[in-house]
Length: 379
Length: 180
Image (cartoon, rainbow over all chains, first blue to last red; front, top):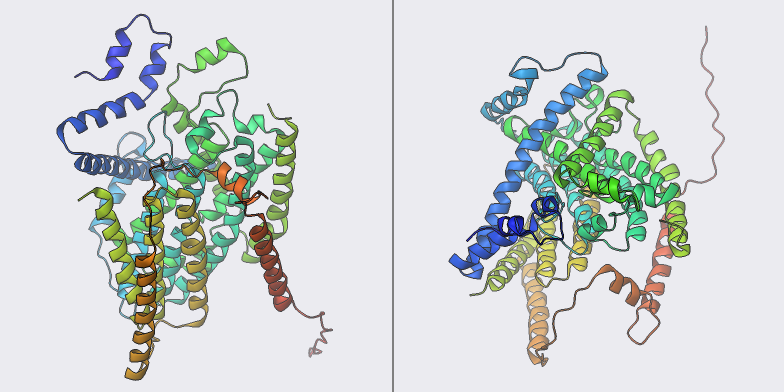
């Protein structure tokens, strides 16, 4: 049995251009589903599909994590007028793989007066939270593990669970630096969660749905950042700031401020357990960037302008996955740019920024957006 | 056995085991973590029922909000070496009787109620439906409870601000420094 793609490709009486069929992953996934159903009962089919998706996401997770660490070091070097890693492989691209092996072989140092169970559990909570969030992100048309009808809310709910891991890590290490780091990180994440939520609500008003596939589909004739006029742009900026804070990245990396707290909540961790925290931080950045790309910049949707048929036609040639990755890495580059150019904030400045500036701006912004949608002033 | 039966057994076993662990654990933060597991498994049950909105709200409010607050207050008040004393046998017996009575009452009520199987297709509860019924003044609308709860929340927030508010700034008299 041939996949539907090939069958559709050869048929001449096709109204849809062939590249749209090739770029649409749903026929491939449906074909896999149908052929698995031929061999197994529905129960084992869903188990097998879950396993396949799990392995694929794990692989993606590892590759993205390794690449982002490399990208961070290169971008940092670029900002500071250095070369960055350049010895292992061409342009140093295998540097992070070497680092990974180093971390894997390191000794896991047990802590004498720590709460062993919680100490070992904490890295897993952090990593599972980011792992669950990545399942709901649409990578391309049809390349979407679960399409929940409250997709955005789910991603925010699940990624907020990571803070529990951070708090547990800080407390169970029995170390004052870890505890202070965890407290700071908790206060920071809980307060910036509000801004992230409200800035996304601004766009949900415009989209009229929380389902990620519907949000992407609604941006067919223009991305929301352009369709929503100024409020959407303000929401984008607020989202960038507050999501940088939510992922504990610089200039908001008070939770692991090296000069005061050694390494914050993961001071006592070593080897692969430390690597889990490290990896989860980068994956959280990736998740936040892909939410920004999906909600504000159209996700996998190519750059379309209203009724410019010819222009849209050309843009459709670029595969959706490339669009998605390009937008996500653009947002990631912005966040790295923040980290390496701004100095670290103090904790009181951080909380003032959230509660006295971002939150009121956001609330007014939601009202303005609701008014614009009510009057039909958006495109 | 169908796959959703297996999942149901898995989730309910997790809820029961971790609920017992929550009340029997002698370490306060471990109890909070077991409570987190109970709440997450409950949201798993909601996902099984395909009521995704409630599941996500359960994750955000209970797992992400309330458990974080509990952990936060434990972080501020308790040290890692603190353990609860084990309670005496009298307390154990009385709380066991109370728990058993509650469980028996709930089980009897559930068994007595005549559930009728519906042949209608499962309804997709999306955001639009929830928003409309939350603010609808029709027979099955929820606008009155919504408003009552909003006023309750407002009162709680005002109270919190009043409690946390500092008094009028006192005039601070700086001690004179010896400048010799």
